[in-house]
Image (cartoon, rainbow, N blue to C red; front, side):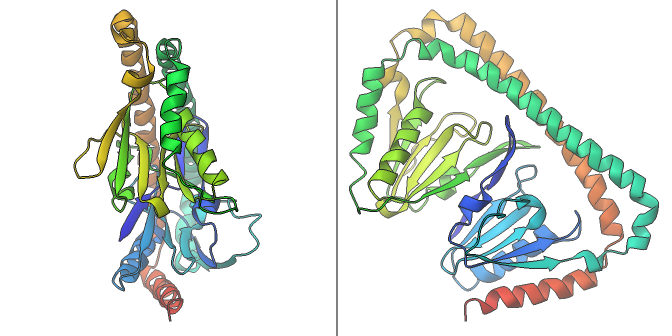
Length: 358
């Protein structure tokens, strides 16, 4: 079984990552160091596939700019991870119980070949950072529009009914131990250069019961999920907490592995519908919002939805520009890289990872 997720995101609050939480309990983490284009993602994938051939569960962490590339691999049964060091940056600075092994690909890069491109590379790096900042600013503007959208429903939410719904879901979480449950924080999706990508169906595949939470912005979905996380922690139940890839302060899904239960926001841009036994819909608009709210503010809501869609499209377009700059950067480094050396280093790393299972 391969699970797919994101440990970082391009959000309205910048590039926010949960690598420390995603890899909590790690015994050993291999940090793959090297410039863009030197083959880090390729080798993470090759190692992941080799581990999978041994019928060992793996979790693949995708890059939030380009979901086709990988930032990391987690092998939970053995507490082993392989991560692109650039992706996780300072995430593990205060982690003490994990052995970190740094694998450098720098020896594969011919510095002499890069010398004529130093100014170009620096300019590209500056443009990439500026592009990310522009994307963040644009996403934040989009979030403020989303806040305006929410107001129409927040003003008409029946809080007592919302509490009843939350209590019904809390009842699904039994008291399992006297200790505190562990919460593991991740992203189920990301705003990539191609648009929104999510792995909800993959992440919930092994659960027996999936509750698809429908509703409007401001109908209490994220607030309810936060309360369910707190309940799990208090009752000693481990929970996987999936944040919104657009706004990390908002939650999109909670999964209780020991209970075989997943509860998730199933609205755009990660809208899904029941497709198997054990799937059900919980409509927060019906359960918690005053009847007729959609109709009462139809014109105003249509206007804010249009503004939101346009702003989100503009934000994604900025990420597409960043992707183009990153590709140009990769090409320069790739031309200076001896992939025979990369192959040797990668094979040594692969063998070392596989030795962890002997």
